[in-house]
Length: 115
Length: 113
Image (cartoon, each protein chain N blue to C red):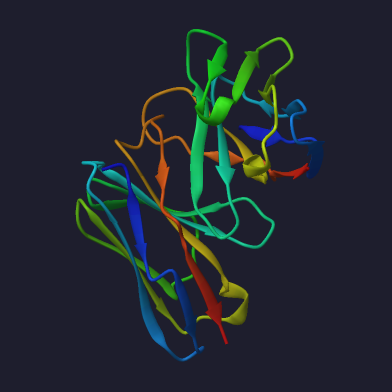
């Protein structure tokens, strides 16, 4: 079974500061990993995903994440926070493989950005 | 066109009402999904359609009835809902049900009174 743990339900940063949102996963098979962003009363938008290949994945809006198998982690980073980054961020995992694979979400981390 | 369009954006309904949520995509995706999201919680999968056939029902109460009339359209029929069913209902689609990127709609905010 797959699961995701997001450490910290809230993360506060100042504008221009480094953003680090933590995600650890559990999977019995090589996982596919995703980060989604959700703005208030909106749907989810995919920021980036890791399936296979390069472990450093670059996404939209300047975000990137690194798959570290030894640490079972997929932390999301951005060098410099912008006010518009304030939102809820969800890490999600599915097992790699054929057929339907249920997307399992973490509990989310709310990013707060102060001026 | 990379959009999943959901209507209506907001819906208030009484417990005896019948209403429907609509979801549409024109990306040629053959997998479509309904999720329910309560406040401050992650989305929870409700139903999965693959090639217009229901393939997954996550033990959802029968007061929620999904329908996939064609490959572009997904409906969720609501009847005799309870106040605890109030939530954001999200539709998503993907190329197929494998590990491909899921595109989400903006959701329908449902309030049951």
